[in-house]
Image (cartoon, rainbow, N blue to C red):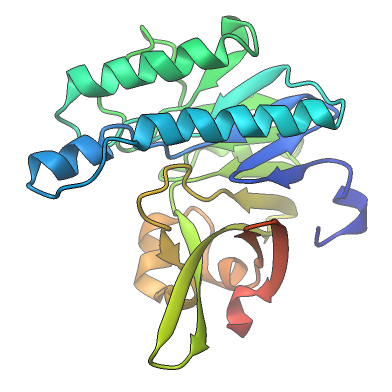
Length: 247
């Protein structure tokens, strides 16, 4: 963590954010239907998106239980679905994931936040623009709301940007992308931007962030974004990679 005082407040577990004391597990940008959209476009890929998501979630819940911690509430940060047009496929996959999550926490403790891709609400009207619990605000990140900047809010959690980092081992030969978290400060609040949960693409590289991209897609201004700390998801843990501006 960037600040010692925050070490016990939240932790990064794979592609999720967990608040142990509150028992809140957060993830976002599932983009269900992405693989189906590609196949409809003629791209031959295996039908694995849903299986991989549920498999990853099972492993994350297992890790938390192994640490003798308890998940009391799950927050989806939006963009649960992707393709805007494959309602039948997306709805069925959404319900399968919900069925699994409901084996872990009560249905009333599953919070669904609406993202810019969520044009269909399969939750029977339960999607929220944002969610606030005590001093933490959760939102997708494509729109800002005055309530999340209330003076009582200390942490703002969002998704939407799909942050990743490109690392080069040998110039011109090998470049690899890794999903990452961004953690910084804005208006005296800590902001945390989560990576996308779906695995087909790593995301948008923070070391390629352009000014117009940040200003167009982020509720966090460019200056604060460039001062954010990068936490890269590696094969065997989370690694700090310094500030975005230093890449």
